[in-house]
Structure formats: structure tokens, C-alpha cells
Length: 388
Length: 73
Image (cartoon, rainbow over all chains, first blue to last red; front, side, top):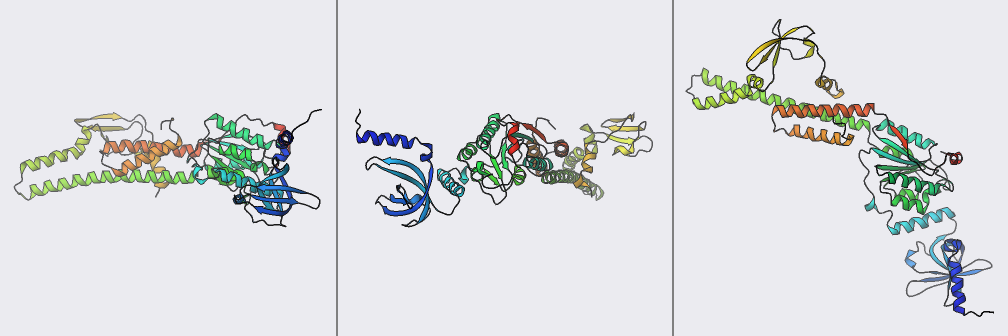
């Protein structure tokens, strides 16, 4: 027969208690009594019901979100172990909630407070979403209306992207490992710009996988920015808090993910309008300059004023550089109808077989039209914004 | 347009061209060349937006089809 010391046995009990999964993460309801506070801010009390009681200790009073007093009915969360100095089995409390809340609500509040304290919801770590994503990963159920809605919305708004579905169950026991696996599969590809994690509406139990700590940590560690769109707009999940962007619904997530085609078209139209106006202005300014020079020269000649020959010469050089002749020198040509001398400026003026005269810098030659087609300029004129 | 340009790059280039034309300070030939490039970019962006069809692919996960039966949307 072996004789043990007290310390061996309390140590043995401690090992057993602390290796038990249920006792390591447990909610216990009861009434508070014998409450006392140490100078260090530790709170000691007993949780009791009609037949039993249990010692409890809460090491940091500041963590407590509610005021407690003797006689108050509460639900406490923590882990159970033995305090070897006194031999007492006690609950090491990390959270207290008033009774009356559902257990899922309590778990939600507990995890939310914990992750918030750890910094998982920090606004400073939310990453900006890409303005023009090329590949968007979707973590959702492959058969549901959610995927259908997201596909429709993105196809309508901005069909330039590729959607990459990472299928998973989104409720039930396999949802948590499934969602984590799907997130990892998308991150492992390395070519995804944005991830949408989505699920349609349901009860708090249905949405529970999105309140799981492991799912929250997987979203937090995703290399790719994540938009969450879970349930209806009144549902807030832990996944929403940790995601880079929360969308109230799966459809809203799709809208946040891509720009709108109409906005881009408006931008294109404004670019075209600005480019066209800039070019026209520049051409007009050149023409005006030529006119002014002609006016100066002819005034000087007509009025018989004695002109500074050198100055005039300078202006002539300037004039030459802007005259049509100089343009011809640069390789442009003037095209006229052979029949009536009309200047050809658009393709509707010619037909296959017509004779034309082409003026170049030092002469002209005749040519026959063998074909004509509309160019980019014609397309520009037809662009919606340019129609007047 | 260079097919190697992403939609975002094409739009960015178009913006740069528009700003350069607006600023001016170059000769007519340079302006015309930029204008032609800009017009071609605008045309391609417009066509891409209107002709593109959404691509949908799938990445392999641990999901199995028979899991789906218990799902509600």
C-alpha cells in the first residue's frame, strides 16, 4: 500500500481537473454570496443554489462589465481547478452575465469582448478593398440562393471579374472547419484580390459558425481582404466584426465588392469629352495665331509704313511654320476631288473608282479610290456622350 | 489597347492621357497621337464592360456534395 502526501494528491486532482475539456470552458448559473474584494482587486465569492455551493475567484475586477452584489442571480464563465493551498475546488471566473440571456447570446458577448480586447476588431487594421478587383473568392454554400444572388449582382455591375467559388457548408457541425478550409484554399492560390464570406438569413443557431472563435481567427489571418455578408442587416456576427468590411447582407457584399459599370461609363465619357475639347482648343489656338500674323503682315504692307525688314522676315518664318505648306512638309497631304476640286474631309465624299488629286509638299499626283472604311474617329463621334 | 493591361491600368492610362492633353504644352502631332491612344483605350474599356461575361470557377475544398442536402439558403 502506498501513502501519498497531501501535495501529491492535490497536484494529481489539479491535473485531472485541468485536463478536462468541459471543466476548462464552462458556464455555471447560481446566486452570488459571501462576496469580498482583496486590496489587489481580486473578487472572491460563492455561487450557490438550493443544495450546493462553489468557491469562485475573479482576478481582475475591471474585466467585469456589470455590477454584482450578494443575492444576485448570475451565470459565470470560466474554468474549474483546485486551489492547492486550501484544497478548495473553485471556479476561476473570466466573465459574469445576468441570468435571463440565452446561452448563445452570453457566449457571443464573451467572445466578442475577448477578441476586442485582443485587437482583432481594430479599425486601424482594416484593409482597404481593391477598387477594381480581378479575381474575387466566394466562401459560401454552392447550392443556395446566396451564390446565385452574388453572381447576378456582380455580372450586372462589373462582369470584367472572375469569381472563384470555395464551396462549404455554412451551418451544422462541418461548417466551422469547412469555412476555415475554404478561406485557406482561396488564400493559398495567391491570385485572389478579395474574398466574400456569405450566408443567407437564419436563426442565431443557423448563423452560429460565423460566431466561432476559430473562424474569426481565420478571417483575421487572411492575407486577402475579406467582406462579410451574413444573414439580414439586423444580424451582427463575430465574423462581421473581424472582417475588413461588413456588409449587411450577401447581396450588399456583392455590391461593395465591385464598381458599377454605369459609373465607369460616366468616367469614360468625361475623359472623351475632355480629350476632344483639349484637342479642339489647341487647333483653334493655332488657327487664331495664323490669322493674327496674316493681319499684322497685311496691315504693315497696306499702310505703307516703313517696316523693319528683319522683323517681318522673322514673322514670315513663323507664318510658314504654321501655314498649310509647312503642314504638308511634315508629311500630311491635301486630298481633292479630281472632278470638281472639292476638298475631301470625310469618306462619304468618295466612292470606289473616283479619281482624286493628292497635294503633297512639292507637287501633286492623281490617284484612284479602291476602297474606304470608317476609322476610330467615326466611333468617337458615335459615342453616346458626343451626340448633341 | 495592349491586351496585357488590366482594366484598372487601362483606366489609369486614360486618366493620365486626359490630364496631359488638358495641360497642353506639346505640339499638335503629339496631341493627336495621345488623343488616338486615349480614344482607343476608351473604346476598349467600353467594349470590355459591355461584352465581358462573368467567369465563374471553383477551388477544391473539403466540401462534399452530399453535405449540401441539409442546407437551407
